[in-house]
Length: 321
Ligand code: WQD
Image (tube, rainbow, N blue to C red; front, side, top):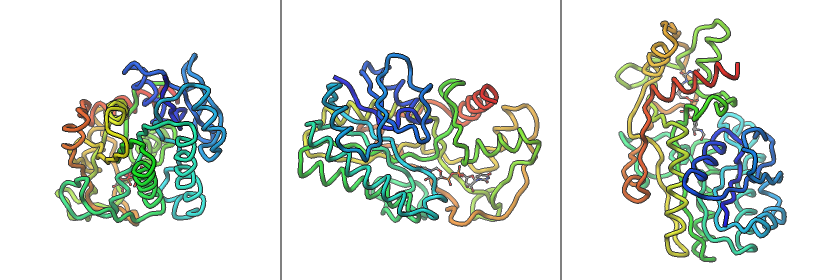
């Protein structure tokens, strides 16, 4: 009995794969390799090269590999790109979710862990975001992630599936040097890229209503995030049919852009001398998770801090040059 991991050749997927194996599960990866890379899938793990939108191929993979549950990560994930190409995001993320739900019903697979995002909340105005904070996404990306939650919730209720959605906050770090984030439009890789190019890293706005004026986020180590999927898989499998739940996956700890810059300076051993530039449109001043529900229900809690994230990301960045 295996778990089908969609998007298992990507940055987060490669970590989730190892966490599932660590929890004793057999894993089959389904990935179209549009952004994923084959070398991140270890020898001996079956890789089905297909899109989640190919319902027949997904159902066949489930039957052939004796799949008992799905961890669904395969999706488009760039906020800016989703604003420029909304139809593509709806096709890939929403039709992808529908196709996967169809394949699960066809193949008789019940349990699913769904990769959602803090982007479902939009620009919140609360200190800590709980799972009951209203979901008002402000990008097509966030909208497609929220619609995916609704697809699996409603299909679970009607067809007896069991679903756990995980709302990721700001994912960073690397579980090993070979597994770093090469996608690189997020803050920490952007800082590294600037340093590698001999440029000054940029702080997008220092006039926000926060203690140091820069934006505050809840950074979560990708290896901790991966462990949350293994915990969620166990929870989904033990839950009654028809149920659905969503959990924030963060640390409940806010770090400002200047805090991140200071941590990078410590890790690299010199002052990175960041420069303050204009705000980036659409950035909320602060978004930090209340992480209690995941601890209580899933028995999961983050173990690694911002220094661990920056140090492991820097090590991987240097290793892959
Ligand atoms: C973090 C902070 C920037 C680069 C996005 C999505 C979210 C999730 C993660 C997928 C912000 C500031 C950044 C730089 C900077 N995506 N910044 N200089 O925007 O919080 O979250 O990615 O699920 O849904 O919205 O992440 O890493 O882009 O930015 O000052 O060179 O760093 O303004 O405050 P963000 P980020």
